[in-house]
Picture 1 (cartoon, rainbow, N blue to C red):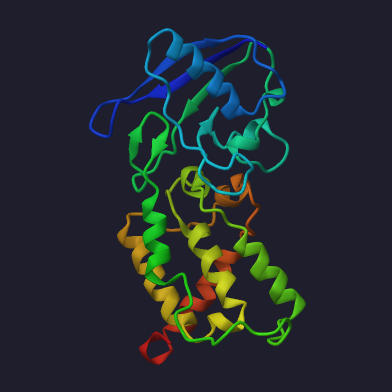
Picture 2: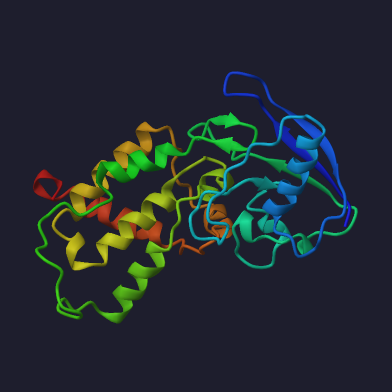
Length: 253
């Protein structure tokens, strides 16, 4: 395959960016999208040009590090019939001779560091605000010592699969991080260990979400449509229910 790439290049956070066109030849349809970028970077390096900076780590779709907007959709979901991360998107999803636009996440809370790399530490600060269990739960219990109903266990697991890649923010017209925050809140809200701090947690995490500059949710649903882990959209309903309940709790607990 021969591909024309139009890639966002930006030297650093302070400089202006622009789209730069590259020709990539001899691309295997079995390559992942990141391996195709590797191929281009090898060519740029041989030519003495600056390679394209992009985030990646596990390349198995589980770490959440990779993430770019491909042809206008996060993780290139518009080119893939199934939910996927950029590292698991393969070039067979594109046609030979295609022109592909590649851009970084676009959100004020995710400032561009360089080229396709953005700063997503705002998500870390939301987790630091309350996305954990700090109460003493004792030593590790025996299996099934704390029974959790099947429906709640499944819902907790579904929410826990969020990898924090930020595609939900990039896809949302309001640049809201509500699906990410809702996933973390729902995960702990379904488990016994998450109950002691359940309502205080939501107040702290939502306050940090807003302080980081993420927009509010207006139920458009683009976040869930591009989520590579298919986090259920109704986790945001869970967040809203817990928020209302927290308003009637002393000290938010």
